Length: 127
Image 1 (spheres, one colour):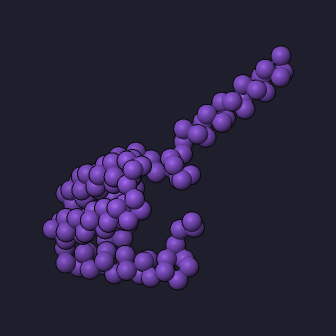
Image 2 (tube, one colour):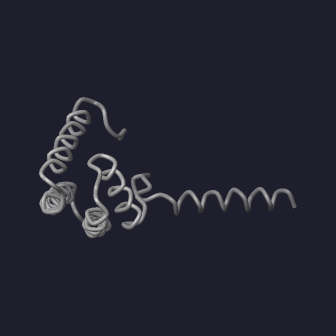
Image 3 (cartoon, helix red, strand yellow):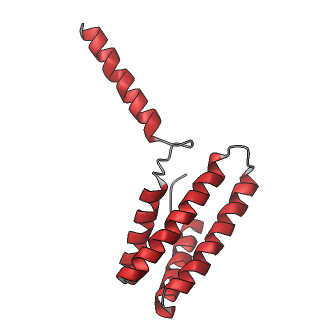
């Protein structure tokens, strides 16, 4: 009886771990979760108004869905995925610029460049 219980627990843990992660071992969450997190991060950086929060979250949700769709298709080459990411990043900048004040947008861009520089120097996310 103990053996069956141990096997069941191990099986359940394995299934839970397998379903909690996407290919590559990173849990990316749903588009809604990603959009919410991105909006909260931007709000903490530039202090969004309620109207801006709603608009930014809509942009983030739309782009998160597009990004997940682009990566879900495993047939794409690495270069194709990189190009799609750059396209979506440019789209995000364009939409953010239309929503944020000049000061907020500058702060966002400056912070993004600072973070990009840190990743290039060995900082940022581990691979």
